[in-house]
Length: 223
Ligand code: CA
Picture 1 (cartoon, rainbow, N blue to C red):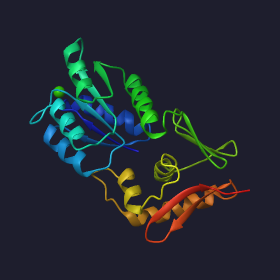
Picture 2: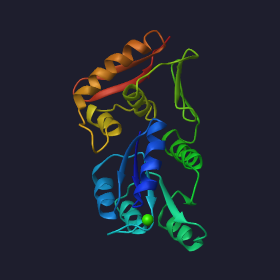
Picture 3: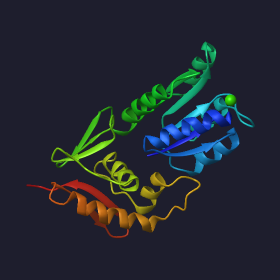
Picture 4: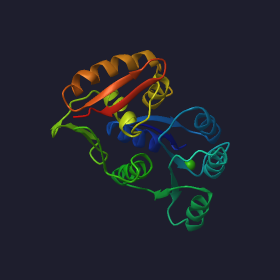
């Protein structure tokens, strides 16, 4: 799952990005509103963390433009402490949550998880497919009750698939969830991750089906 962080305080941005990456998310960091607006128009994010005071376009403007384009991804706004009118304004523009600065990184992580849970798994903490179980709180996959050992990329592919049950995901869509702006996004690499995932899922009552020219579907095996 890919997160966009927009924060012009470089030190704060770096520490937040490091914490989120440490938790296993792909994170793009931008420092001004225009760059954020462009990235949100062209890239596929699961969530955006948006500061209000930004150069070129402020957070409110970025949020308003995002919602005007009909994008529903969750937005967590970063506000100055005690600025009630900022919070109200942000919520009215379609923000999903806010966090007042200064904040603890653990609280930010908890709120990010809660927002993703609401938007990705229909409010459920866990998602099941066959004997494969995914827990959004721990971000752990278990197969027949045993923890599945996955690389970060394999984890990303499987998360993208289990978050959209019953939907065929193209290589491009999966790559868009996986690679940050500064990485070489290679849809062909997805084939390798899918190949490895198939081996790890063998015998677990779940499989990844290929639809030639369309993409992949995660599904439970009958019987
Ligand atoms: Ca700022």
